[in-house]
Image (tube, rainbow, N blue to C red; front, side, top):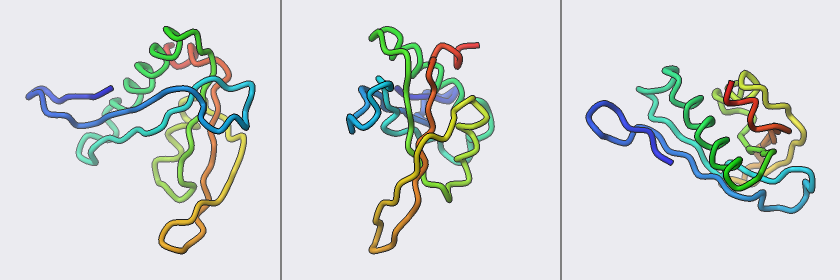
Length: 114
């Protein structure tokens, strides 16, 4: 999915599908990536992309989802503000450094459509 500005330029995107790890049997979907250009952040585009993600998952009969986000990412609070609940934390290695990552879960993705 992509978000465009009034000139048809892509200013954000999101990618979603089935939960990949298999570690969360009660969660069907996963947001693989979501990104919005900094100049367009704080304008509701992220929420619209999350709603589009929810609609896509519901069309696939998937009711729940999660997203992994770097704990240090200043945008991580965005997911909590949308009703996501932290359910797990793990560490990934980037450039030889251990970085914490949080998993936010939505048990009912239709809650994002309200």
